[in-house]
Image (cartoon, rainbow, N blue to C red; front, side):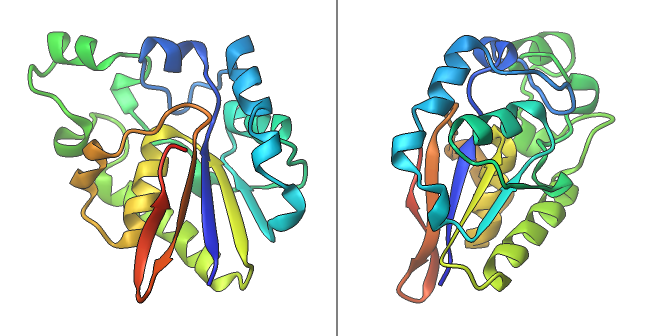
Length: 187
């Protein structure tokens, strides 16, 4: 059985302010760099047979600062495409467009649908499960990591609202007896 480690990128200016960031390619703040370096003592790159990263700079820099240099970039790990809501906070979206807006229920105009996000992160799950390695690790983003975990456990995507992902956090997915399971979250 493969254990899947999920790492959200370290802090950026937009993650700090709560702005939705998908395709905008931001680097880490100095605090984000420190958060990524703090992962080093917790992760030994030699233990991971499969190392994947989103193509975004913030995810790749987190991987590198955590000690991982030989990662494979996959577009399937990029953040949910927020379309017209790129760069906006949830409060701004609610004030300007939709008073009760929540990504998990209402989606985004001009961006990806929940089904599209699920399809590409299900491909990551299939890749990891078929890899034959003991441990795999993915460096990615907040909403995409939630979706990846939900795909791993075959849960409906609306459950994502209940699983916030902190910057530079580490989560572990695997099995509990015969069920796909979340073994650690935001540790």
